[in-house]
Amino acid sequence: MSDTNSLAVHPGTALAFQAGQGHFEGMPVMASGLSNHFLRASVIYAIFGMGLGIHMAASHDHSQMPTHAHLMLFGWVGMTLYAAIYRLWPAMGAGPLARIHAAVAHLALIGLTAGLYFIYGGNIPVGEPLATVASLALLANMGLFAWIVFRGTGRAAAVS
Ligand code: HEM
Ligand code: HEM
Image (cartoon, rainbow, N blue to C red; front, side, top):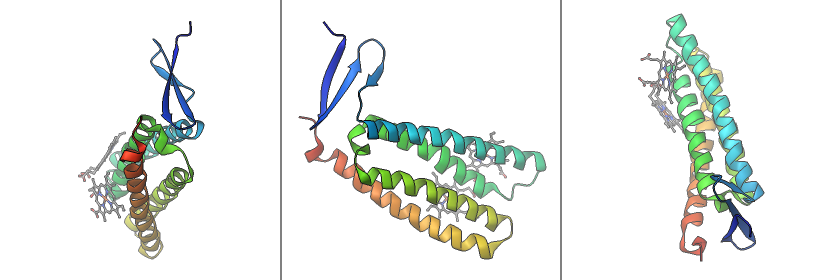
């Protein structure tokens, strides 16, 4: 007898839970990959954001506080939330929309961080257009994520 139970998540996808080991195996490759990808990215953003925080504290120059705050909250907290959500609802991570969501999240966060860094470093002509485009991309991307969430939690997505 096997110690592995199979649970149908959505048509064509079997999710196997390894009894006693507390982890999932055989998750849809893309869904699991997306969650891991967000989690890996979040710790990288956290390292850079904390590095900036330490630099601010050590230099007694807090002018980059908004850059630090957004890198920590979007990069560390937000990306970790995405990782958890794509892990808890793996079917949401399948398909091209979730991959677009991931790509835009990173490009726009990097753009916003760079834009804020320039703005609060005094180079507004470079920083402002970057931050404008990036923040509009982040807003649109949240709209895309809202679509992914509503689609993934609607009646049609209910596990039968
Ligand atoms: C190595 C760790 C960290 C260091 C050295 C650090 C340092 C700082 C410093 C010096 C400030 C400016 C404070 C001020 O001028 O009032 C600040 C603000 C801030 N930090 Fe950090 N930080 C760290 C970790 C974090 C983490 C983990 C988060 C969030 C998850 C975070 C979120 C924020 C936010 C949101 C602000 C702005 C607070 C406000 O609006 O008053 N920081 N941090
Ligand atoms: C489209 C995305 C966003 C834009 C354009 C944006 C813009 C701004 C701006 C212009 C400020 C004022 C900065 C200043 O004091 O001069 C601010 C402050 C702040 N924002 Fe955002 N924000 C965005 C998303 C977020 C998100 C998602 C979070 C949290 C998860 C967040 C957390 C904060 C916090 C804690 C502050 C106060 C800290 C500070 O003064 O630096 N923001 N934001």
